[in-house]
Image (cartoon, rainbow, N blue to C red):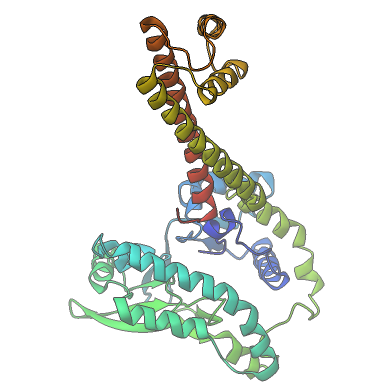
Length: 384
């Protein structure tokens, strides 16, 4: 899971899919086309795929995905052999302790986690260059994340995992989510169960695999495996892409397009324009509110129409903010009274009522503009 950063894509922060990652998808499509079963288990970053698992399965009918590519919430892996072991395979966020974190602490946890996500996007761009040029495994983001885990206990809930293993009578569980590659053994009811974290392909370039039936999955370092076989530490997008893999690029592009359609990227420029326009209108409406309130006070105290109040009412009449009957009555008052002449009681009540109605309409418009600002701000990740 987490092949797509859904949230990042919606917020306009997503980077185009790099060529090197497209090549990985080409290889998976090649494998599927040649009979290898590929199981995709959505994670918390591409969580919109989870309720669409069944629909995505039907995509094979349209040629988007091979019939050998399946979308599942979880899967089962059996090692085979005379003493076959059964492992539950899932993304792992269901065992994330944030599910058990006190509600008052979650905003702080989210803030640190989001900061890490922003950091790793930057780190990804520099890590590859360091790997290629110096051969040094330098992952500042990984150190930050490890420290974060230790600080707030951001480790898998063993209790939750044990319950999951016991319920399904599994010999272990294979997951990812935290990117921390490794294997841990647990004693459950007198038998040994394993938690296998296969890591990730961004920070650690790790994976879990078996080489023959009966083997327990082992976590391996992709860089070390490549080096042992005489290859560069990491592949480059300038390396030759074998033709039999490249032949599946059309399928890869269709799949990327189909996935991205689930997270339509927000046009940040348009959202910023919408936010700024609504903010300017709100400021203008606030100034108008102050003028209307001042006019209402002056009319109430003096019982007269001064120049400022006349201007406000004339402008409201010209902007179709008043009903026809109100415009007619207001015109009669203007015709009968020069500035600073006393209004009679009915005229005074009418004028005060009219100003209050204009204030109410102005307040409603302010709420509408504020709502527009808030919607744009949420989508832009602004803090109001």
